Image 1 (cartoon, helix red, strand yellow):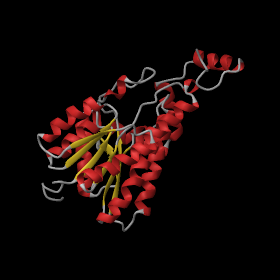
Image 2 (cartoon, rainbow, N blue to C red):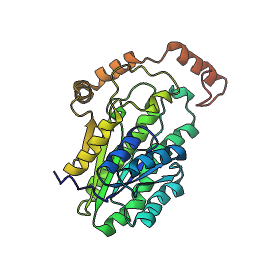
Image 3 (cartoon, one colour):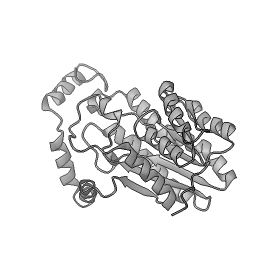
Length: 286
């Protein structure tokens, strides 16, 4: 492990920083002497977070941006370099939930989910790579989800957006070989964030929720120890067993997921009836 001052004055972009994992991560880096640049749409929250960060790291700053727009996502990186002279670490954490009966999801909603959850990550990463190459290296951390390991009912689009991030990150492991750029893929399990309050439909999960600070700590540890892929919490027995079972008995896992949060027969029947009347995805089921 590197010294306690290994993050001193490192410039760290953290997206999705207005709450939850991003908020905890920006603050954790500030406490280590890094210079966090917090990014999200909600400027008031960013201002409050940056004031907290500045008590540990006076040069901490923020950028209010809509990461679902390519130009704004790319400009986050360009503005950071213009302001601070460099970027050392990029944490792609911004995401929106999509917990919804598949028949209720429109193609536009699906695209919006992909733009925020995956394309924003691609846009910021592509903007950052030339700077990182010029500097001789750096770190890109992509925050995915355990939902890509075992996909819950009603999470198809969310899981798809995070699966895209997974494939992108794993490809970078080999494509960036020798560049000095290290990529980390993080899979948080059930974390206590406001995302649970934004679900379109009730979620069946009623187990323990872990603090976002745990994820922030794992991000920092993964950077220090050059880890490639991390599940958080790392040693949770249920998450370990779910991963194992999804590999050796996928049919059993699918059955278990379907039983835990089943598609109601009346919802399917309503979808059939509305489809027969000419309605499209997103209009089905009333």
